[in-house]
Length: 263
Ligand code: SF4
Ligand code: ZN
Image 1 (cartoon, rainbow, N blue to C red):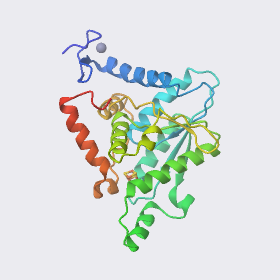
Image 2 (cartoon, protein in one colour; image 1 turned 135 degrees about the vertical axis):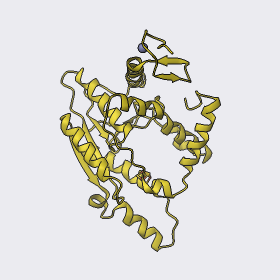
Image 3 (cartoon, rainbow, N blue to C red; image 1 turned 90 degrees about the vertical axis):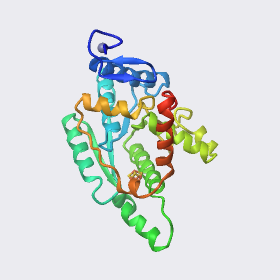
Image 4 (tube, rainbow, N blue to C red; image 1 turned 135 degrees about the horizontal axis):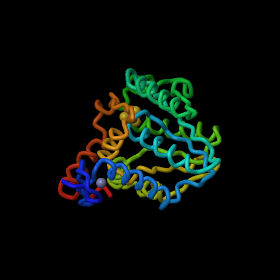
């Protein structure tokens, strides 16, 4: 198969648009989509101080790689600060932290590692133990994600950030939307990025420049660019039957016959 835009062999068939893309055209299309999303939703101003949530996984690595490239084109723009949150889940984050540290050092990016233990006095494992001791059924992701979001915001604010950049991709955003719909949580839907632009005394403005890119394309792009990301599933995600997992399976299933459904 030949690329839809040049004479090279195609490496990827984009089902939702019908395009066939070679290595270079595929990579270019991802970078253009990130740029278009930032510009369409006015996510960034030249003088924004970007705080980036860096987990060491594919999404945040792809986002950092691209934001560095975008920033290099803007003279005198404030430098990015990456924050990695260590939830304190045994055997889970160590590798991510090491890779994040290495990447930031190589690219001269200021990097902060913030742990639940240091900020709250308890690691995620310890918090869940308390739930169990009190015979309560914990929903680890709800607890963990709420604390993580708050820490990223508060630490980012203290560091003088004006924008919090998160690596949520199209799959994440469409799952969250459907979950909110299933729970009839219209308030949360109305507050979903990019509908709401928070930038006030408490909350940083959140931006999700990867929100129009499907997860499988992020993986392919990260591999093409040889980004050294970690693919290490969290033990709690595997152990607890969370709604997100079911919604994810449902959407992936629908995508088989309706390739554009996540958009
Ligand atoms: Fe936390 Fe859930 Fe993510 Fe694990 S999968 S790090 S528990 S939000
Ligand atoms: Zn091409």
